[in-house]
Length: 332
Image 1 (cartoon, rainbow, N blue to C red):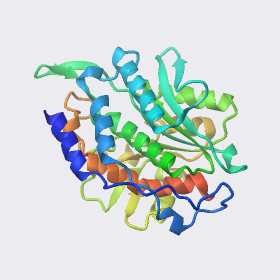
Image 2: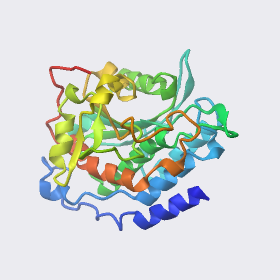
Image 3: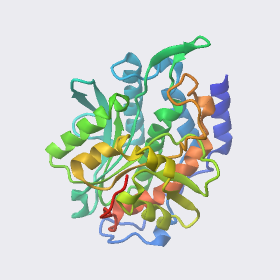
């Protein structure tokens, strides 16, 4: 019942609609003006809620890598990409991997770029969709549903993919990558990064979304960005959104070195380009990390939609314009 209530609430708070396709952006456009960026679409909180609800349902049994549940999740994500109208990356949405730690499938889709030069560069937008499966029971419940970790990030990537498809404008190639085996040690993302490198893919940035289901406490910004000092990505996010402060450096995340603990780091290792994670889990606003209580009832779909809408202008800039760069000093 609580899942149905969550979806019904999300329906009432969803954005009233999204903007029409940007007709005045063409393949020959050299820049994307503030005026055009003001026409960016909004995300659909209802669809975000539906995606999180399915991925964190008991039916998927916690989405442990190698399980029947995660294969069901992969099939669902494949069908979502198909319904949005985004093509598979390569011959199949399913990009298999196998090493001594784990085997599974990353689910990967692509929008090819429109600019004859910038289409040679690739932006990866990703999140892990696996979780830890069945754990020690608490009050008879042994399913670690993984709603916030990381059905939220996965649903956010889907929302961003849908927004780009509605725009039908991206000068660089955009790869949407949903990783398995993150919980086994970033296995899926590391394997995909290596595969992309071997195939000659020119990845210039990776944006990862992780645990975006609950608002931060006492902050005037909506997300934090891991590895904040490694690049000017945070500055771009804040500059491109005139309505609010999008992101900042969270000291607790820096102290715990979260930069190296999520899938962004796999791409940083392989490509040495700006590769960072957006999150709203601030260590005070969510008590169910890797517990059976990480269920949809603890996730705020409206907040998730606001996160997507806040970060999208910066992502749009990075996909279409110049200016993203590594910083010479890293302290995370």
